[in-house]
Length: 202
Image (cartoon, rainbow, N blue to C red; front, side):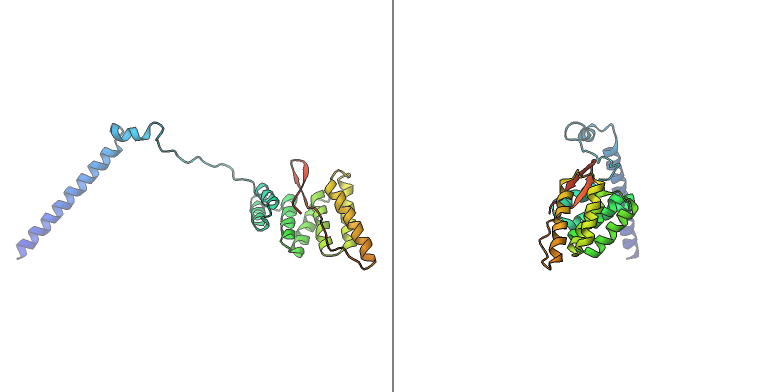
């Protein structure tokens, strides 16, 4: 009985060894550049295409601006947060974060971020304008009118959106003095892009 088991064990090991050697030979043949049937698969129009290396990620600010224009404010905020990680809290990033928070109704956060933006660059017109929008939404009409007037002066009156915002702020301030407040605030947010001020959807 012992000899039969030993013989069977030895036979099984021999079969395993034979199969292992055969597998190695098959793999070696497949990898051999001289093996023309397999080599031909790597040539011609049906050859596999490799992945191209991405050296530079898409700018989070650009992505965020596009999402804001499309009304995707939560996604825009995420893109702006990625921009903050990549670029730091520049005036552009702070202004964009503030604008996204404003669109999401987070007025306190928006105000804080926009105030940081204008503190970083006291002549950054989009941040001043968008801060005015926040103040108007908080019904701080006198302060909003002052901020819009400053944005308008810094912009030298070039932006129609800022001019319209200032006009609306003055009207709200006048109406608030008679306790009749216009709650229909159609203020326009602006951002910097390629040296221009672009209107985001109201």
